[in-house]
Length: 324
Image (cartoon, rainbow, N blue to C red; front, side, top):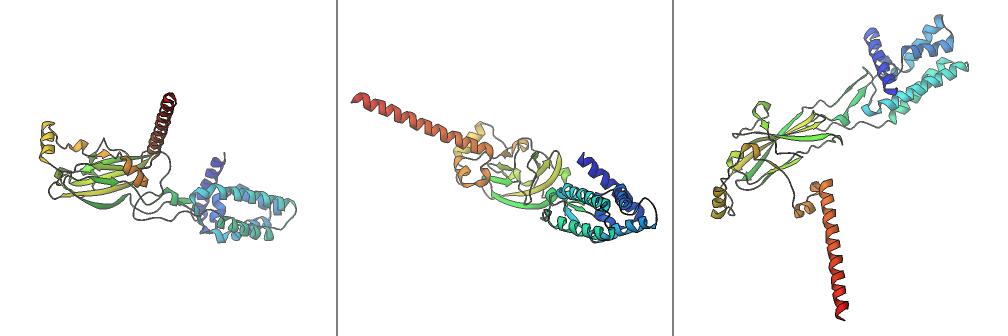
């Protein structure tokens, strides 16, 4: 019900702004309705008469200082609640035969203090991405806006020697929502360094924010793209241009080449990228590898090792006692 009331107040504010074109009404229009304001003035000065128009003008003039206010988008409900409490307080003052000339400026000053105590929105972090945590609400038009940044991030250059491993981290420098985040990977081959989506095709085997290619071949030269989504809505697109250079490393022996020939090994574009499954050593040295599933596996491994040690100690103790 609170959300419905808030949406109704915002809709009324937009209509009033369109009709009267008075930006000074801004925050007052966004979070109160005309009927609420009229009712307050009628309680102060009566149902009709010149004093009623004077009261309405004084009401909007008192809040002129909040015309250009902008707040954290997530704090809208808190500000709406504060305006609701303000209208109740003004009604109580009017019922007590108070003066609107004193009540309105005092209420506006209290609202300014409330706004200064709201949680500030995060700053926009360039160069790219849909950054919901930086969304702001503007009282001047009762609308919200996110950072004016493109979805496409600049291309990152990755150079590896043929036969080595290439790894890509689909990580952005701004905060992502905690739920329903997915990662999808695409590839534009032929040595293209591009952000044109028409050249990319899906990599169905790749999933998660870390992916790797091993061993890299000359056919892997091109641009890899990672798309970060929340509930099918793109939040950012990252690009990695992989440049494969040089001969294979010394570890690429003739035996390995013969083995691949027997297996008819050949890099296939649809399977050239794979999810990163870190080894135990990588889990311990790379903090980003400690995902919840990896932590569970480490805990299970530790528990198994502890149980095995306990069983071996018990067997040794029984053997020692039986010998004595």
